[in-house]
Image (cartoon, rainbow, N blue to C red; front, side, top):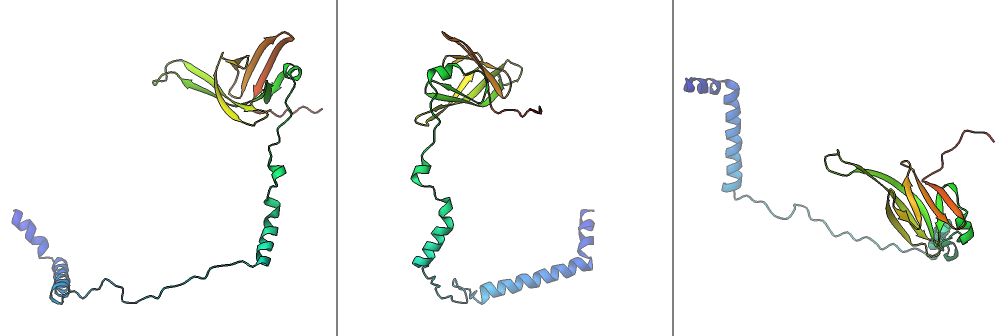
Length: 194
């Protein structure tokens, strides 16, 4: 039965025509490659001459024109210096209260960058650990340091408590009184008309 099922498709006229065309093509290819020696060259049939590109040189007038076009983008050295706000005095630092985006402490400016909450274990069933990322910028040098502060940890004498995903509370007591600051990432616009 296996022989009968194989012979039937081979007797089909379309299959026979396809086989004949394939055999003619294969024999022609063998003849061209082996018998005629395959006159294929490694070089392309057309030769291309080398193309030389002239070096572009600007005239002084063209250079001046281009510099004038970009002159308003060029920053002069005096403008390029970092303009740092004046450092707050100790008395002004101790008076900081309420909702602030920046807090000045000693020689530093503190800015809240993120509040992150993570699961303590890989399964996700453990306790949640919250911490804040605070930019600590040296006012006079401009040097930045990103500080990771856990909920309940001290930072520059302040006790840090995480309130929301955009706010942390900074508390400390000093001889002049108590400081309560809510450090926020941004201020929310109010709809009240004043």
